[in-house]
Length: 162
Length: 316
Image 1 (cartoon, rainbow over the protein chains, first blue to last red):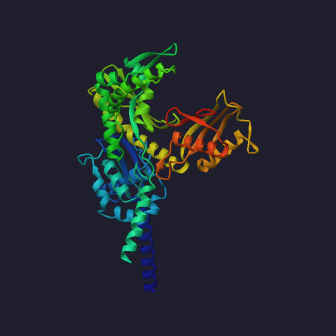
Image 2 (image 1 turned 90 degrees about the vertical axis):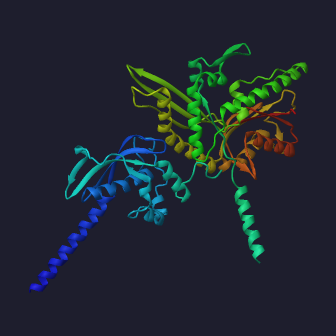
Image 3 (image 1 turned 120 degrees about the vertical axis):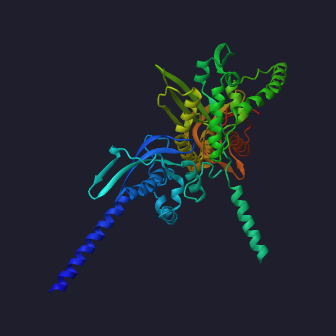
């Protein structure tokens, strides 16, 4: 009788854990952006709120999400109101490229940097359920990122077709 | 066999290169309003009416901020792989051609013909042959010790005079910043949104063709008019049918059709014909050939700007 209870316990535990993982993964991709100012030539500064289990994972997600925001959604109120990839299907069409680009320690990291000394404003740190939500000010090198995407054939250059 | 394969690849590559359209030329100019407000203008007599026209040379000589803004925009466009035509250089070219125009004007007066009338703006447009003019304007706002810049940047299609791109806004007020710094910041703030709109315009050009206006006029001494029958149909309808057949996706509008005048606007012409970029004048030349070969009608082509062609029927 003990074995079925144990097995049932494991199944419930596994499913619960599996469900939790999916939810976390979903949260990893969730972000909000807030324009700060146009940075030095070719860069843009904005605050990106991301979720994570701890501060470190929040920061990693923030960097990835900042680059995603510039490429896919744009930054409202900034000079990049339109995203670099104007085709909404770009993420699906170039799935292999983006999978490699956004993988752990992927190329995306070369285009983004934390734009502060690491201190976080108290208002920008909050707990949402079991997750942390933190806002980091990041600087994204939009000009270099655009060139990278143009060379990869993901977006068209201004002189495309001429 | 290898040589054959190599030749096939070479042919494909050259076809690819030939199929590329002419790159539109873009030039940055200060807006008329900015020139007038700063006193950079000349007053000219246009057939009895006094008119002001921008004096770009004076603006360049007396306003260092203008050079800074234009240079900044030029370098940002170069970074995007799109070098712009330089207004300063264009003004130098105009200076050279003025002497030629003067000689031509004297010849025309001696022959009893009218003098050549062309404003500096027309000269800039015609000398640079810019497809798109980026018109700039800025105002420095002062509120106590704080200063800000209201900046307007408009991309005008020289073919139609329509605005194809734009970016405008007021920057954050600042106490310390020099005007030059505020201007540089304004350019950086607006250039990406402007370029995104420009890109949309280019995509529209490739999909739907360039937009031009075509006008037909009747010479007083011509024995026919646009309602006369040629080969069993009224001439105006035959011309309309031809324009429809040549326009991209058959897109055009008949703005006016009388016995003496025909006007077609929003005529979308292909970006290129074979290896040659097509503009209103080349399109007018095609119409001229059609009228000559089909109905033996002589026409004179008059162009105004890059996107407007007038054909005077019955005159050569």
